[in-house]
Length: 346
Image (cartoon, rainbow, N blue to C red; front, top):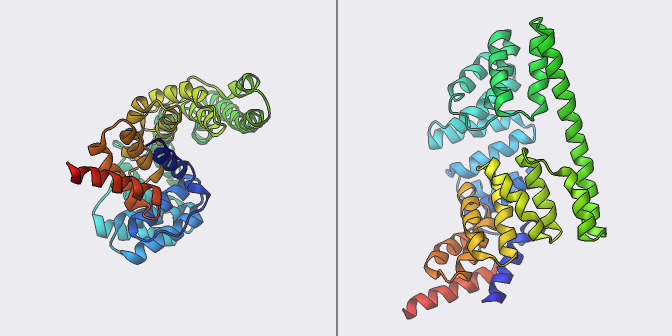
């Protein structure tokens, strides 16, 4: 059993290092999602195109393809794909959000305001109100735009883009004291972002070349108990270096601050799994797989975790889903055959 689960782990943590082409819609979508996770949008778009060649009516692949095109700056193509998703799957606040952003990029402020405003009270993403504020200000309605940017500053207090836009709005309205405060926040957060990049390089280097006690001190510069992104980043750095016990605390704090962070839940589950604390790995991996059911790494590790816990009935459908996402993995196939054979004996 241990050898099989170890093989599954190798698959899960090595998925971004190049694999054989996988047939099937599910496999292409899974690979595309993984590439998007690494911000390899050009390669991801190719996977979604292959999925669509197999099934042009699949709205999941078409939506992800559209997001890739937007990320690549291919805005006209992205709009056509988002419109096609709407025809296939009906109205969606996610599609409305992206179409609103495309309207903003094409300077159609009235349409951007209409679309983004329609989903602002139940936003699909926290930055919805930021783009709505920008649309209002770009249309000339500074007062309404300022209102939405102020809400964005509450939702995204560490996003320096928000404070920069809000500073400009205050300044144009003659509210110089507030503008000065926002410009100061913008400068501070922008500098922190630059410093974080520097600290990440230093932490990564220390984890490669120094004893863990020394590296821990260097990496602690990234630690911020109020910033889930920094906590997740710190946990990832420890995990990448194999220091899984060190990764646990920042990741536990990250999921408390941001319960919808896939990255934090996934890495927390991986860390528990690598420490062979399978009972504790289960809940984070279940959460990660629920947030991104097409991400193979979370799904296969959840299946392996359930298998290690002796919950074969629960493991079987999870590993079957993992197999659909990546049917060429012989280790997953071997586990499935073992589980299916055991069920037949019963």
